[in-house]
Image 1 (cartoon, helix red, strand yellow):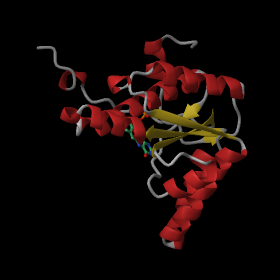
Image 2 (cartoon, protein in one colour):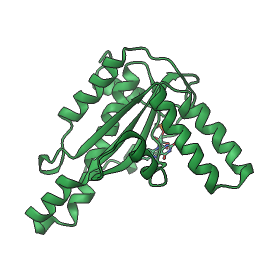
Image 3 (tube, rainbow, N blue to C red):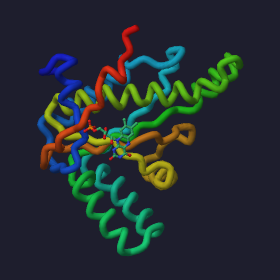
Image 4 (tube, rainbow, N blue to C red):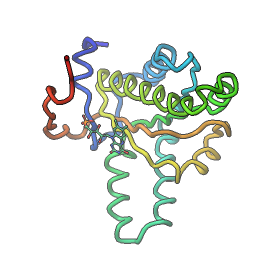
Length: 199
Ligand SMILES: Cc1cc2nc3c(=O)[nH]c(=O)nc-3n(C[C@H](O)[C@H](O)[C@H](O)COP(=O)(O)O)c2cc1C
């Protein structure tokens, strides 16, 4: 990382105009993902998060799938706006990460520790979110613009079939990234006094 952690965290924003270029090699993108997947914590060290790295034609494909599915679900006029947004903000980018949770370790833990049965699916989503945050921050530190999207569950089946995703993996989020085509607007911050209590 070029920035320290606090600087990188403050620099992270949602970028909605992307270009199909990369400031780093494809191997370096995969390394960022691997670093996070290796070091981000998980409940009971379950290591249930899975990340699929889609680059080039595979990245374009996931957004073609999303558009095809939405086209069949939406009124034609509304779909035109959605299509434009998907193309400008996501598909025009360089790559997309798919964040999954493997349900096999989650179920195994539920059986092993019945007392926490209700908690494991929740903790599984927590660890996935931690992975998203770490990778989002590192990709932007490397010079990408990134956002987080949720077209699941409507795209799950077609995406799984297209990219041979194991049946136990549950899609949690999509993360398109590319060189920023525009900077994000001003962000409003609610007063920290209301959000951080130091009794
Ligand atoms: C759990 C979570 C879910 C989000 N889902 C979406 C989403 O589906 N689509 C989207 O465009 N942004 C999504 N966002 C991005 C937020 O809208 C964004 O982070 C927030 O408005 C703050 O802006 P910033 O990312 O520029 O700091 C999500 C963020 C989080 C943390």
